[in-house]
Image 1 (cartoon, rainbow, N blue to C red):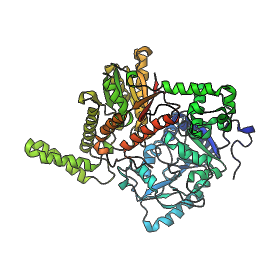
Image 2 (cartoon, one colour; image 1 turned 30 degrees about the vertical axis):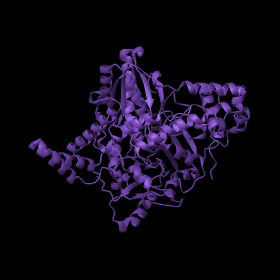
Image 3 (cartoon, rainbow, N blue to C red; image 1 turned 90 degrees about the vertical axis):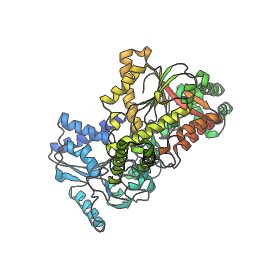
Length: 632
């Protein structure tokens, strides 16, 4: 194995001794994308200066889009010349027409190739249309073309949640080359959002092999988002195995992982830094360490002993806090005071709950929403997107049957015509195609009706719901447009109209299709505008909630809201009103077969169990929140 990064550094002062490959961590995804683009630009300029070509290996997916955007900007604004660049893409679904919505040929042209001056003959992408009997020969030719170009100088990679690079699924070996491969179930579930359901995802793909990737002179793997944290940790800190093919990059002579802070969150130096380096202890880090120690040894915080600290190598914390009993009491009291019962929550205030999808409000903060209504607050739930892409065609047909059976009573010829037009649109659509506008509207209305039914459980009504239908979402596809001025304007105008005292925002940025992250960005810009126009004194308090994918960590949460068994049952009843997402959701996310109501129940009861094990009262269920004046 190659010499690992940091082996020449005395005592690993940076805390990277468990990392078996070079890792760079950035605070924001935008910073990461810019640095990767700068590295690529530097190589291009060096080769251009001597009249040589640069050979790039390129990925698709949401993660590298920021890099492509920066490279396009450099081409347009700084004159970065791609005329000598040669590209080889990692993979493509098979079978797949190059003009299909989900085609990687189309993705690369729309996001990169059509915006820079790469020569057409220098672009190479695996074929999704080659006949099955010819696939093996085609793959051998692809390998030959790579070698004829002089080999790949820089390979850019993402990482799948099963740890794959390219489509090298678990089980792929070191010697594999470009080939056809059967896609793993998890990969297909992750791709389901692009194909409007996992039944439409191709079962096979053509991909560069692990050996092909490792032959590149330099490799950069980029990962963003908390949902990538666990698999990144395995790829970086554990022995490389066929189960996590990204781990094979540890064997490369010049491979680097570029991570945002969220994707790096499970690395030892980020999660428990005191285990790998000297740290400067402050109250927040001491709190995290005490909670970790309590969970590790299996005793409540107030029952921890000084020997527990020493046995778990927390000597430096003991040197700063020699009275460990006092430290434990301080942490315990800090947690206890963050428990807010109904009487401690806002009362008679103006409140906006921003819900990225039409069900995030009740899934993520149904308990809080219920208590806010009981406290007499003026609550408005702002549904930011219509969620239409997450509705099955069968749900539309169900409502069409209802309308057909109701027509004799309604006696409306125009309604009959509308029903027939919708039915025809559904019949004419191929699997994976974008819905016709009339079908998108029908699916949006299904989600809207469900949303109103859900908040009625909490005592709200149609008058308390706003359907913002933000422009960035209106593509008819899972891939969305960037957040633009119109998106921010819609949020700003709502805040100007309602002058809220509190706003609730989805801080869960790891939903599989990125809508939460984009809604967060629009709200953050609107809050900044609101601050500038109204002053910080009148700015609303921001409450960040998390949803179906994760919960706030105990040490990071600033508010815990207990729920009784009846509270949780009412929350679940509200989630049940979203019938189109019940039993079988369009995009449940990989790894997790539970329904959304089960995830909400399990998340809330688990948070209560964690607090109980730390020694706090034995609540039935708990929701967690972070509060701020501005969005981080």
